[in-house]
Length: 553
Image 1 (cartoon, rainbow, N blue to C red):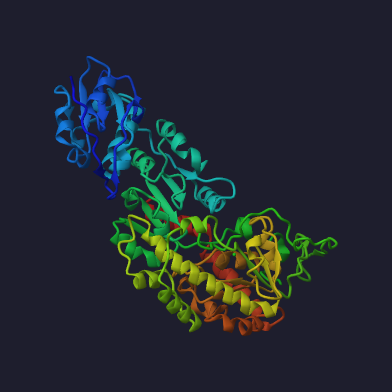
Image 2: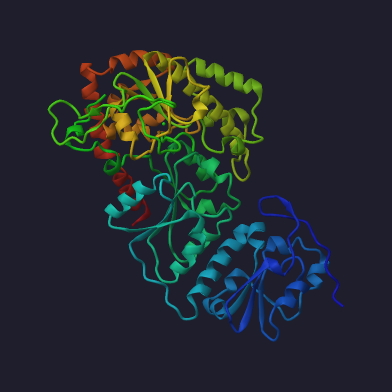
């Protein structure tokens, strides 16, 4: 009679103590091969052996980190006829001719070992014995849903570069990709903020086995994004970041390839409609500059029963301009954005910073400084930033400081006439005299708001020390005028342009606004120069061209 081994608690690859789950339900089977390939024994070898079909040769692989932590009883219970393999022993014929049995918890316990092994085995088993690797094609897999961050923009730019784009529902990406890889070999899997990829990197390793490069564009703070990942697979992806200041730390954490790829404009979706707006004259993750929610018509405050807004037809002498409602913003400062990013409280749960550090950050803000993410990382002396969630504790401080900066900017803008488009979370946070309007649809309504506003206000999140927001591009593309805090990310643009529209402290905002008020001589020149800069150097077509060149595609 076989003695059942004592259940052991092991230390996982990420340093967590865990009891490996047991039972037949922890195994999955694939294929009908003549021999068995058992990928992971689990905590009870006798139980695993009883599940396997009798009379077949059994080849076995186990993660060294798992095997060395098992008690003597476990090793004694291993059947004598099992043949243990190393990853180097796995050839194509052994995989494609096997019936695969996989201990599913293994990849969560030791993802660096099992990820590449399972990716290769599942890909080759899916192809079948003797099947040729699909020929490469100029297509891109892009996980995303309608309205998701940058999906429309990237799809348009990729198609313009001559690639076929297949948009995948993020929640079904892991289900849809394996059968697709049996028939075709895309040139690229591109995702924003790891959307569509699982925390343990199983899909990444499947794509890697199929020789499909995986690129992740980190639009938000990259260490916030990887804080939810449970495997170092992310260091093997091609990482693009909108904030170049994170590149050194990412490389120190093992990232092999990092590209600075800023946000951009999408003229097809955001440029003024009709010839009369083309001259650029006219009247919000971390905060990306996009409004939250959507669908509410602009121009009416909550509870308003006013008559329909008059129609605005464009600048005098314009021909072919598309009429649009006058939103009453011609002498007002506009801010568009969420009061906080969705799920903020849950994301930062348990992340606290010492009170004395917060006092130092507030004093720094008062002196015109920027207590950003890197400042907080140094003050809190947190390193490494992954694995684990300590990166979020740094972010909690930077996010709180960013809210203070934004509040100070709104307070300074209020005397100029401030209108905020956003959620009801703003209701008790706005300065006296400011008006709140409902959230608006990003593509349908926002261009007209930017175009008609006297000024659009931007306050860059301190979670991105050298970051830019979508406003830095969209406002100019729409024909509006932006006033922005002095984020170091402005170095992307010529100094002669940025000095005209940035303010060092919120107290400087009113004077800057008056200098660029509607009707002032400088305003038109600034708008024209900025719009030319954006449309000639900073569109998503430019970004995709840079990305494809970097990837060798």
